[in-house]
Amino acid sequence: MDVSSYIRRLFRRNLVQDLMAREWSGIQQFPLATQTKLLALLGTLKEKERDSLTVLVMGKSGVGKSSTVNSILGERAVIVSAFQSDVPRPVMVSRERSGFTLNIIDTPGIVEGGYVNDQTLELIKRFLLNKTIDVLLYVDRLDYYRVDNLDRQIVKAITESFGKEIWRKGIVVLTHAQLTPPDCLSYDDFFARRSEALVNVVDSVARLNKRDIQGHAVSVVLVENSSRCSKNDGEEKVLPNGTAWIPNLVETVTKVATNESKSIVVDQKLIEGPNANEKGKVFIPLILPFQYLFIKQVQKWIKDDIAKEPKSSWE
Ligand SMILES: Nc1nc2c(ncn2[C@@H]2O[C@H](COP(=O)(O)OP(=O)(O)OP(=O)(O)O)[C@@H](O)[C@H]2O)c(=O)[nH]1
Ligand SMILES: [Mg+2]
Image (tube, rainbow, N blue to C red; front, side):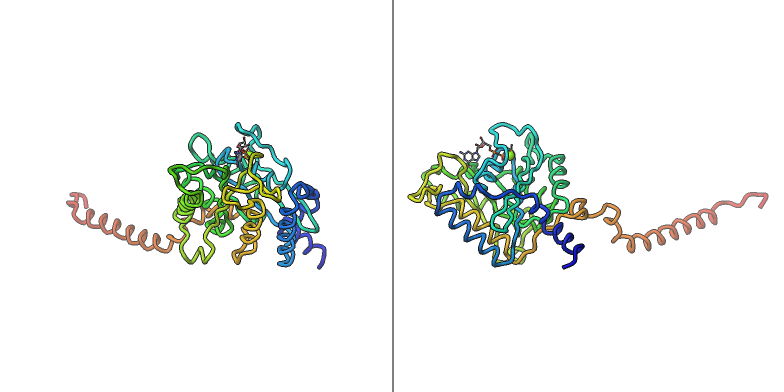
């Protein structure tokens, strides 16, 4: 491989980040069982010739996006705050382990005062320019019971920004998953209903039809970031249904990253959307004959009027 194509490859796959990536030492903080599973997943990725992954994390404010990033990495890599973040801008954290680089992009919440904040969205889009997204984690909370118009607005904003294909690389992540469901519902029933409601929003707003989904409907994964999360005998953090959620989340990320859909390359064209100048061009072939016929008709009316006018005495 010559130098120029190597540099192009570096940029294309975000491998430039490899040069700056720190050792993923947080992995050693996990209990042995989790470490073993995570290293096996990294092995699977390497077998599939993937030596880096870029995961984009998006969602409403305060739902646990940054906490989830920290939980995956096993360290306090990004700021977590119960209150609004001071510096609302995207951050990319890169960690390297045995020749594999994990890039996670944490973003500020895109909802403010009940609306999608277009400025924040623009900031995120600009930050993502020339990056390739292998997986989108769309974060919300399990303990919010209803979906409303705001959920639709956010899904719409993400879809309009990155194209509906982003959802083929999407995982809905529900935080605050250590809960007792209301109305005597079982944990699994409550989870099923909450996820179905959100997946339906994605399907309808992003207009995913059966062909789009092709056997991989958007996955929903549960997360409990709290230090009070229950643990199993192997000291792994587990959900009320017994799932060790960190390896489960990373396994789903691995599956989605390596599914048959292409990763999303964020280029200028994608960010700007369909060029305003281009938008009307398809109608030009239709407009021109109309214009011609209209002018002809006006000319005919003028001629008729002139013909009808009484002739002046001097003509
Ligand atoms: N109990 C519980 N608390 C959580 C969980 N995830 C996050 N939190 C808490 O929720 C608050 C907000 O968490 P963040 O991770 O900063 O949320 P965020 O989505 O990054 O917030 P913004 O960046 O401001 O949009 C913090 O007080 C976290 O400790 C969770 O799974 N369970
Ligand atoms: Mg945050």
